[in-house]
Image (tube, rainbow over all chains, first blue to last red):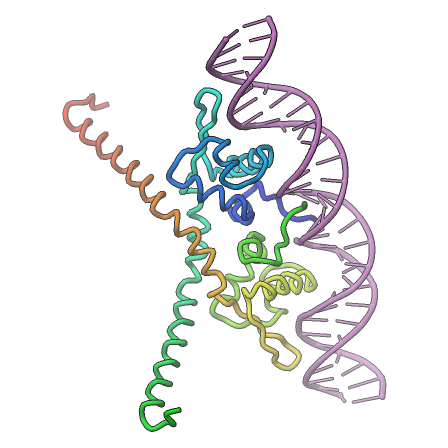
Amino acid sequence: MARAATTSDPFNAVAEPRRRQILTFLAGNERQVGEIVVAVGLDQPSVSKHLGVLRRVGLVHVRRNGRHRLYRTNAAAIRPVHEWTETFERYWQHQLNRVKERAEAQEIRSRSGGPSS
Amino acid sequence: MARAATTSDPFNAVAEPRRRQILTFLAGNERQVGEIVVAVGLDQPSVSKHLGVLRRVGLVHVRRNGRHRLYRTNAAAIRPVHEWTETFERYWQHQLNRVKERAEAQEIRSRSGGPSS
DNA sequence: TTGACATATTCCCATATAGGCATGTATTTT
DNA sequence: AAAATACATGCCTATATGGGAATATGTCAA
């Protein structure tokens, strides 16, 4: 088989840098496509295509307003990604603690008679 | 241009379901390739290729032990993904609050004389 | 109705996989 | 040294884009 469709889930949709940029730009505020085009510096059709992917995955919501379409990030759809990564949090905390402990042990060793240079 | 290389960053590496499965399996414990093959139900070459991607991105660490190679998840490399998604947390919290507030308002309306059916 | 404006779609091309299969390589056992 | 074991790589194919260019669609203005 070939590569999986990006259109199917938030993990794939968010893997594209441009789409992350768009989601960040649309977090908290509605924007029309033209504004997004300026913000990300891609041509309009490309932006529309990225918005299409995000829309199908549910990462953005659209609302019509006359000739414009107002997009905004649907943060809730990003949550599954956040939660998956969160399951690893305790492991990196563990790593950080080990680094910290080593640093402290080193600190103690230096203080109690190590060479001062 | 075509699709970006998955080999370049954690977002893309993690977009592949099989690789997420492997990372979860390797979180906290070292495992040899054969065990991973059994766990994910793919053939050995495919697993090795996924491990190769994860290794290049830094999502796993390897250690040799005789004929075996022991892999383990490097949780710290997942952190950037966690942090990116975290920037949206306040927005979905906001959404949840709105839902909750509407529910409470509805609750009050029902209590103060609405039809009981 | 005719235009102008804002977006979405379609078509085409180059490229990057994900798997399946075969083969290469390092390490241990006999 | 030869055979076996455990992985990593290389090769080939079908498929899914991402971007550019052209075109279709929908809406408001004159």
